[in-house]
Image (cartoon, rainbow, N blue to C red):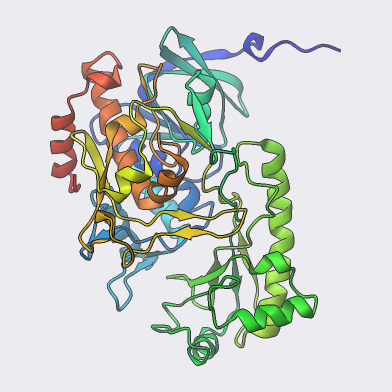
Length: 463
């Protein structure tokens, strides 16, 4: 039996059209859709799963990582609104140190959906992008697949917020991936333990020298060779056959607002030979490997951590946590030197001071702390800009790619990839796309950057 090539498969073109179509309703894509819709634009967000938020919801990456300069949050605008709405639901919180990034992923699903629908945007869940339909350097439509079969949806401007630059790659945009050897950052599969006596666990951690604010704001960790006071327990668990050696490569737990008695874990780390999140076979194997690791870590917590004796698995993230996969070649490629030198750009759309944070499958994770070093980056009030050109791919006239797939080197991407930067890049992309659709026949490069920056400031942004 022979099958036709993908481009010959029949599909139905929908009669409806949109001004902006966002492929991927995740961290950057949800914000892009909201921002574009608030500009009075017909917006459709296409999402493979059943809720918005991506890494922050279906990936269960909590809390939002802090991105501050001189104590001030650098990501404002829609990020501020998201936090306010989470707080109002009891799904967000600020700890005694002023960190307002504690969040409940399940609550975030509701908030993001409400923000999009209130703005007049539409969302199409359980739908996958198959390929773009090209006309020269313009995308005319996206062929998608869902329960309705293969369909083409048309728009003037497209935003690729798939995280893996799926649309851009299929449209022929040049790609990078991994470090100089093509090795990507480690993947994780996050989960929660429910039924935890957090007061007992908090007291135990305090006694171990891991200071905690309270049972409501806990953060604890262990990495081999990093002087964690929990390392002897991990070593004993490996000796007892409860854990594998690699289970101690990265272990981190957080409390979750709105979910008393539950701890969210930034682990297990997926085995080292599975690191390419754009490879479907590796991605599938990572889901299996992650669940096996979750069983081991659950057994460890029950046996060795007081307060966890009766704990049980509460949530397993339906989405593998991917830190880095494909990165587009854009009009500008952000570098490590740009970060260390606190580079400024005339077309800035985002400010960043998050550390270079490489979770290496080779070991020796690199993290540049803001209290070390002599480069300008290490000053307390330092930050660098992310230019609009980083989300403008070469070779396609009506496409933007905000988020972790933005144009950057491997090291630079490890700094700009965190959720709040993706929020801000997505917000900028949404406004740019809306204006390009209405004023410039879809050509995103023709949007006036000073006007975009003024609009972001009007919406509460810091650019």
